[in-house]
Image (cartoon, rainbow, N blue to C red):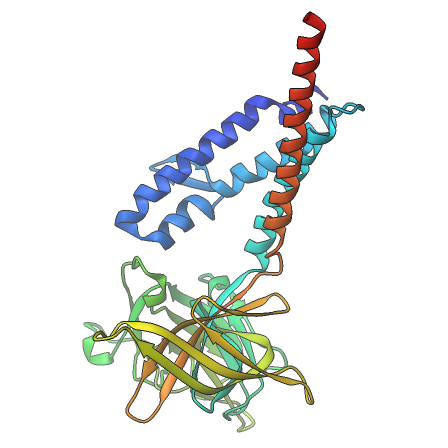
Length: 372
């Protein structure tokens, strides 16, 4: 029991808060040379990170300890009486804030939707995540299966539902480029298939901006006629066709991860205006039609600083592109089902602080009156 009491220690609270301050400062300095994504991945999205051979706690581990510390403190230090509600509300608010952040990390999505005028779509594209898609046919609208590239480790075998093909990961690089046969110094025993003519991969250094990463994966294939290995890159011109023993075809490609939206959105019109005498946009907006079902639709205007929100999804007007014949609007899409939790947590914590402050003031005033 005494060992469990250490989780309610105020010393653990001070250590967690101090180390989070250190990580914040360290990460801020680190991102100058390595980029914000690498700093976030190293210090804030990790449970443990290494400095040389020395393991240090990351922000995820520290915040988990802080949540446990608040939870134990809530029950260990609770005493019935009028002076405790303020402290209890403070503990509840802080725990809600930590739980909300953890829930957002697990379920949150950041992606984009790009539409030309008159075009519609019901899927958003991730900016940093990639997937291997697999389908039986090539159409504008197709049923496909996919596996996240981040889940594939060297040596792992996987297959798709109702598929006669089995794949084994031979190479998987976060940032790489494809090589043609003429670029190799040695002859390959097995020449992989690729729609762009690549037969090998060369790993490249990671970039500061993960949006610019071009991953590459080499797979061993069992069940395809005349093909033993394949190479997939984002620079492939088209999906790679695989023929089965019965003569039917399958198509596979590496692409940015898709997220299905709870609606179908159509861009009807895009307009923009500039500051006088400059090419700096003053305002740009999109008129879209949102289809929520067969008979439910509504017109919505999305513009700078005025997003559209529905069912936990938020659509921001991010940017635009202009071609000779048409205009394209780019929307940033986020999914955050716990968007209101920080507001609730902050409100509860504020009420608890106010109650505790007033209680302490009342007790101090009462002591002064007794002395008088």
